[in-house]
Image (cartoon, rainbow, N blue to C red; front, side, top):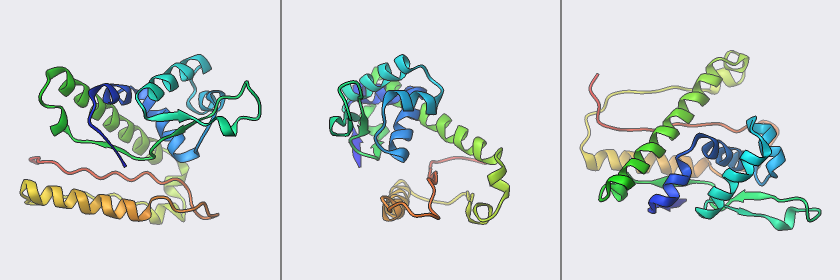
Length: 183
């Protein structure tokens, strides 16, 4: 997992189109701008611009070995998982604003994915309707315990990550968040 500590890299993440492009590359693997444009509903020129921004930030790279000719340009994620800690960006107001923006974009992406799922016929059809889950709750935790819980949730996600394709497997989005809150 790539741990982002550079505000410039975080600024590259803090854009809804770039976030979606990274998600597509994570799930579908290497792709060309034209395919990414069709998948995301964006213009090829717009996708190409955002891919260059992500590449300059070191989040994606070209995959020239996949090209069948000089006109094809393939891109892939360098690391399928990225993470950052707000604590790494609190020293500078501009860096903190970039971290806040990246977190807001990430949260909106999560909300959009959940809303799409809940509005789809698949959310009411077996076998996925029996497998999908939603859980939440209030726990009494110290900051150290919350950090421990987060590490355990990440360890579970890591255990399931990278499984090979199989006929019964589909991309599954999992959300895990924990923060102090009052009902």
